[in-house]
Structures are given as structure tokens and as C-alpha cells.
Image (cartoon, rainbow, N blue to C red; front, top):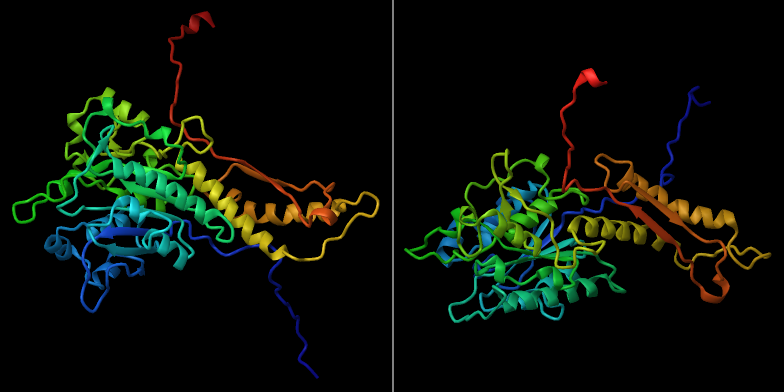
Length: 413
């Protein structure tokens, strides 16, 4: 006879939870050279979880100095922004590879990482060009960078299309900006709402000499910005003051100039054109990212990468939940030919529960509210399709805080 006892069985699978989405997983393409017995150009390295992982394959400060590269710098800065533990894949390519080629969906660079490592949520492309490269400018920006925006947009669209169903952003190094905001291209007119051009720089890196030369003068801190974004929840702005000042002493731009050389109206103009850089905030010490711009019009729902990242996370979770329902039997209401109300409600509640757990009922909230609606009056027998609507109420961003201030005479009260 069994010993008298109280038996408790804990069941699983009732909450509808799905695996963590690892929102910060990033793929980085950098220029450099191969390291014997470690990696060849075009290899996918990682995932790295700290800068020490890069050193273990031979990418360290000496590597950059010996090869006039910034591979280590971008990786180091990424983890400075993201913190250790964020997943980073890296590919080193020849300096003859154009930035537009790095993000081309038909070229074996960023697209190769995305198709091989299917958990990538963001890509960053950086480049120090070969000596023979002769840039052509359009509105103070290298034409190849503007072409890279178009190529990156196509890569993002390809990644999200069937059968891939992968959602990502791309951060481009806006190197060698020519320094005049008044003549600069309005990159918000480029209609690419998941692509960002980073034009800010760390002047301590820009002015670093290698054998009396400064090969880094025109770089931009794309790796650093990508790391900041990777380390934040999807709804959070990289320039949020409560994030704290950047670990950056000498902020500048990718033309090698210090921020102090630009006046407020010039920086505001550049900000309004959609470039990402670091600026100071009156009354606060240090430097802060100006905003999470993307290359699309300000009137778009996706005018900032925060809303895009939130929407993409909802899309990933939605697919994870509903893929379990594919080819399952669906009960039909014999009176209407549509879905029974109970079936429609169960279908919408299944997704809504997971979205609330992973995005709404967490701290910090990644969305203010998310609701799902499934209309029971759907002709599933004719279409073999169930349609659902997901409505996201995002969190807001306090870009402007307006306070009305006046004197009061208590005697008049």
C-alpha cells in the first residue's frame, strides 16, 4: 500500500507562453582582413556575447591598428551600448565591398547571415573603403550610402516575405558626411521605415592615428548605436534621458568635426532631416542620442524605429502563436456558415493572452494595450482562411514637454 500523501501534479502549456524573442540579436558586417587559423573573409562569426569573444578569434585593438580597420572598435562599441549577453553575429569582408553590396539581398553578406542565423532582429553595416574608392556625393552624402538605403529596404522586405517571416531593422554607417546641414539630403524622403543612417561619431576614434595617418576620420558610430538599440526594450528611445548619458566624451560627426563646431540651428536642421547623432541637452551633462530616426516621412506611423520594433515584435509573436493552428480542423456554425462565436473568441484570446504576457503586462510596458478581433462571420469553407485583426496602442514618447507657468496672487482666490 502506498504511503498516505497529498499528490500535486503541476501541468504546463496552459498560459500560452512562447519562447523569448531575443529582441536585440544583431548581425554586423565590417571591413577587415582574415586571420589565419581563425576565420576567412565572409565567414559568419559568433554569436559573440561579449567583446572577449571577438578577441578570442583575433579581432582586438591590435587587429584594427595593424590593418587600419575598425572591426574591433565597432564590436567593442556595440557591447558598450548593449551590455554583455546580447547576441551578435559578425562577418568581416574586404574593403572593396561597397556598403550597398553589404546590405544587398542578393549578395552573400548581411543577407547570408540572416538566412543562416534566422534569429537576427537588426543588421548593421560599416565600412572603411579601399584606397582606390572615389566617393560621389549627393546632398552631402555618399551616393553609395543612399543606394544602401534602397538595398536595405529591399532586404527588409525580402526577410519579412513568405516563407521567411523574419522582421528586422538595418543601421547604416553614414560615414563621410560632408558637414553642411543646409545642403544635406532629406533622408526622411527615402521611404525606408526600417532603415537608419547614423552620422554621429566619437572623435576620440575619428582622430586616432595609425602610423601618423588618420584612416578613421570619416567613420560613424553605427556599431555603438546598434548596441544601444539592442540593449533596450523595443518601445524605448535610444535618446531617453533616463537611460543616462552616453559613454562618450568627445562627440562629433562623420566629417571628423566636433559637435561644438555646429550651432543649434544647424543641428536642429540635421535632426529634422532624419540623421542620427549625439548632442547635448541644456542642463544635463554629457551626450545623448538625438532620436530614433528612420528614413521615412515624419507623418508615417513608423517614423521612429521604436514603433517599428514594437510592430515587428507583435508580428513575430503572432506568427509563433498562430503557426500552431495551421491545417487544424475548424468548426463551422451550420446556421451562418461562419465560425461559432466561441471558436472566434478562443482564436483571438489565444493570441491576445500571449501578447499581453510578453508586451503589455510586463515592466516596462512595450505597448499600452493590444487587442485581437476575429469576426465570426467569415466564409472559411470557401477561402480556407481565418482573418484576425491586431490593434496596438503604443506607448507614447515625451519629445516635447510644455509647461504653462504664471504668477498667482492668493488674495484674489
